[in-house]
Length: 239
Length: 116
Image 1 (cartoon, rainbow over the protein chains, first blue to last red):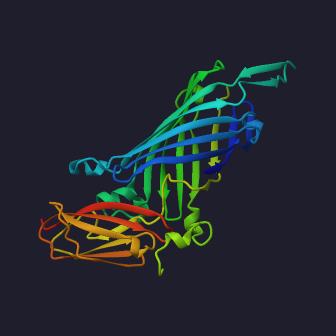
Image 2 (tube, each protein chain N blue to C red):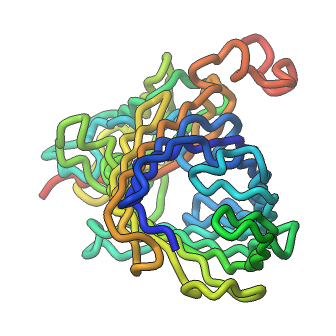
Image 3 (cartoon, chains in turn purple, yellow):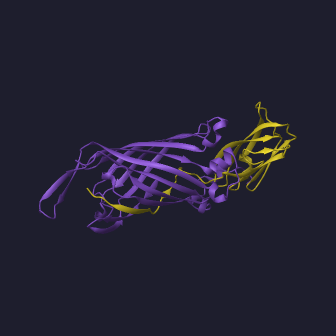
């Protein structure tokens, strides 16, 4: 389960700057398949974008959107020894279907004083990533003696796209971004930065950047949040 | 249609994510992962990123034909030592599984060579 929010700074040519939080996002996710031996995982989630919880000045939607999504990930550890330096590669893919809880939004046009209604499209939300894990290279393929900082890096490129499939609003059918970046994996947190490159004019006209700090709460607080709920049953006797 | 540039900072994730797990991962080993050593090392030493639960952690070492050559293990803190005796020249695979003190299990494997 995850809960998140995003602070957005918008610069619109001719319309100044706008700042604010986007809508609150929650995700309920379950991993159905996790095979270390095959380096394969499959998960499903229900993402909820809670309408009306964000700032309208940055375009946060006033309606809630439900997005059931499936995820798959596959490592390249199966490659033969003569291709061993490709073993740290991994591919992920995801596809979801975003359904707004309102089929249209009615708003007052400030210039005309008339009420206008615009459809809220249903989207196919799809994407994936290709990543190269230096931690995997060091621990499972070959320890090349790189500095510790390098051995904790995961360079990656992600792509995130959405395609209108119903209730079209007249805009470009497919929008999205390609995000090259790098993640630093420490023992108690991970820190990532990615560039955000629009795939077409409808997705944006300049490059942005996103940063993410991901905390491992069970490792930071091993005696409280990280403590097992059933500690007595999960620990060996006498320890 | 809005055109914009933006800087977004994802502020917080609370919960239990499996995107990248910390837990006990292999930090380094002796012989080093993927290395070639001139003579039998006598033991294989694995250094993990967290303290281990000894009763639920272990490893095995197999030669190129798949036969086990490990002769016992000892664990202290985040270090696991596997006795292997005198290994003849050849390729060996170390397969490990551990339970860290935060109760998460991890596993992995790597190879090393003895001789040229």
